[in-house]
Amino acid sequence: MANLDVKKIIRSLHPLERKIIPYLDKYNSMNSLKNITKLKDVEIMRALQWLTNKKIIELKEDSKEIVVLGPNGKKYLSEGLPEKRLLEALRKGQLTINQAKAKANLSKEELNIALGVLRKKAAIFITKERDLVIKMMDQGKNILQKGFMEEQFIQKEFPLSVEDLSPEEKFSFEQLRRRKDIIKLELVKTKTFKLTDLGKEVVKENVEASDIIDSLTGNILKTSAWKGKAFRRYDIEANVPKLFAAKKQPYRRFLDEVRQSFLAMGFKEMTGPLVETEFWNMDALFMPQFHSARDIHDAYYIKAPKQAKSLPMDLVRKVAKVHENGAGTGSKGWGYAFDFKKTQQNLLRTHDTAISPRILYSEKLEVPGKYFQMVRCFRPDVVDATHLPDFNQTGGFVIEEGINFSHLKGLLKLFAEKFCESDQIKVKPGYFPFTEPSAELMAKHPDLGWIELAGSGIFRPEVCRPLGVTAPVIAWGVGLERLAMFKLNLKDIRQLFSYDLDFIRNARVI
Image 1 (cartoon, rainbow, N blue to C red):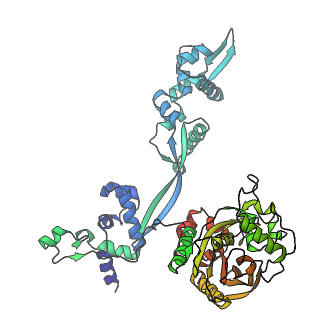
Image 2: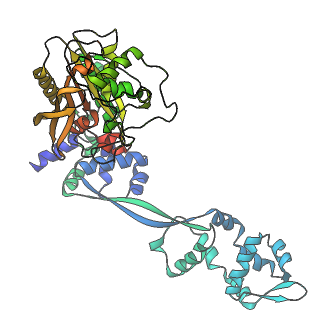
């Protein structure tokens, strides 16, 4: 059985693997394989990785420090260390500082270093005569005769392994390491390998001479060269590099699919301005002007321009009467004096339903008709796992004679099943100023528990009558971020807007 496994493995070997296998019992490093096989580094590394996947070898990676020459080290290798050049200049007698600097061809920085090094070695003596004068001591003559250990060090063949340095070399290394750009330490990774028991069996076989065809070409077919030969087996269990194919940002893709789903169901898309007036955002939806949603802490108001230049005043007056006394809608209204100046205030749209009265009032409205919108909305909020101050909403309405609350419930469940893929759904009573009856759609997230996904209801007569609408209208608004959390199985809403590459690359494709 074991022999059968070896034969199968041999038939699956890549040409690069076959080239290095005969040497795996003799060498254990990439450099040695490179020298004997004449393959490139990338080819050897690729072959070793494949052999590791096949459990023929065990690949080990180690890190070690090596010493290399820096820019000054390469310069002093040809010119000599500054301290040696200074001693050479002093051979024929004492020199002033400036004379020594010029004769030894040293920069000011090199001269200072050379003076420091040689004084520490007791090789020179500096005295004050008319000028500062440098004299060579007997120790300096001895050093010139024997040579500098540091210079002998930089003349070695680099790179050098720090752990392989002798005590004398370590002393020179430490001295030069304190100086600028003479030597540098680098951390390098080395790869070694050893044969496994299976690998030892494979090495015994004559894999280079295996009569295996690696790829089928037109010429092989034409000449029938394939006859009597085996084709290389595909190893479907081999580890391969992970590819990150181009794809849309996960949340962007989800938004596009929601839009396509609505269009596929026959809904028409509505659009509206980002900067809205209180009239379309609230008044036309029968929200009283003293409602808490109009507080500065619940809406972003625009400083300039503070008010809209024009509104359909005939409609504004109709809406005002409904607010004040109901205006024959069967309601008593809110019972306050409508503020025509306040209704013109500009704000950032706080909910997607602000678009609905614009379409209901439009001459383009079709009855029966199905409409939806996908828009950005804004509300001051504390950022946490389920809330953001700016968010996407989708909503819309269906207008048709005879439509009722049962149709709305069926539509909500359809949305939850289609967009959330959740079988734990419930519709419970809710309250919104512009719908009656009103309902909230809830769905259970595996980690966050029950989450409110949508508000819905039947538009009140106080909304529809001023707009000239007589047929019943069922409407809904859904938080798209929360829907996306279900689809992408996320625990934090902020991940939807993440620029973290790991999340973007590995997020579930929906």
